[in-house]
Image (cartoon, rainbow, N blue to C red; front, top):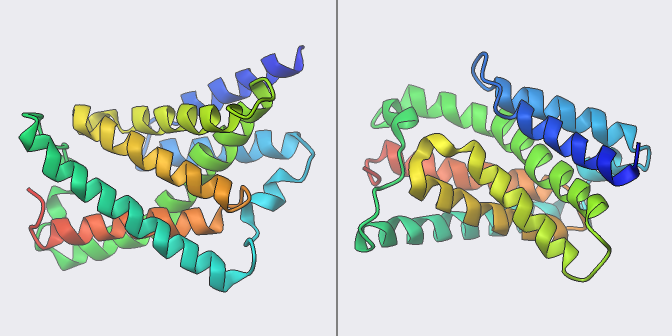
Length: 211
């Protein structure tokens, strides 16, 4: 089978797995397992590269914090713009129980840091960006296109949040994709950024700062 076709089929399989909802977080877990399997099959050391810190842990953490704050700030700006444009707010029904409920907040924070941040960055940044780069013709624009395509998929998986949710997640996907490329295609900074941005969002819901 042609090399590019194999790579494209791998993308299709992993993306399909991210829509399989059998039990809580099954889509993230199945997608992550698929990403790891196809990544290992490449036999080019990319899986090891994904999980090692770039330029040491202090810089890795600093980049992660900066990235997380940037994603959260951008999301907050979008949330303030949607009503002005007459758009329906992002559907956050899934997190309704977090309002004023410390136990529910802590439960979600644990899941965000141990499951969601790791699996979604593994799938949408490490696997998809690298895989799209393998498929696309070598050119200066290919990295930007790979980041954009991965952001589109990341957005689509959050379809349950409505149109504005798709927009917010697409923009977040672009920012996190840029971070992944800037951090020499390693994941630790991305996982920190993703988990931090989601944590701040959950805290805003808990404090009733988000409707």
